[in-house]
Length: 186
Image 1 (cartoon, helix red, strand yellow):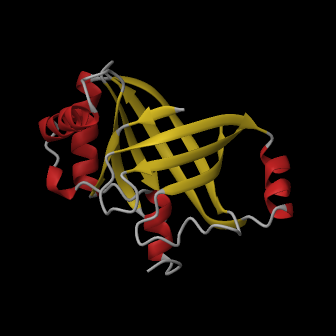
Image 2: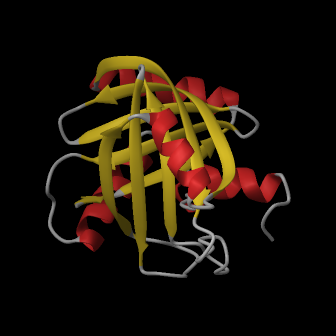
């Protein structure tokens, strides 16, 4: 299990373009990809039941590969998470969808995004255009800076250096935002 520490900000189109220009001068462009993630919940334990869901299970499509992804956010059931534990395995997507159906897992939402990835050796910077939600920047730590709190401080310092209003951080995640938009959660 790996630990993922990242921050996310929704940006208007003008800010999205400005921040991308700044990043392109200080980080290496890695690739542009289309990503589709379908989120599920088991019938015996609804992941969306808590006021602030903290577990997500998805089948991801990445360049022709299927990936089973599980994330457990910490601390649990709070408005603002600090990090998550993450497990990922390459799978046969269709086979897993059939198994989930047989096990009575319910599909919650499908998140489709176009992602541009940059790397500056300390941070992975992703510019996401998410269908129905808009444009975002996601910054993930690639280098150890200490404990979770110290790492988050470095992430926010970096975001601020890009001209991002750090008070507008959004760490609810795309599936949560999309389900809220569609009225499937409160």
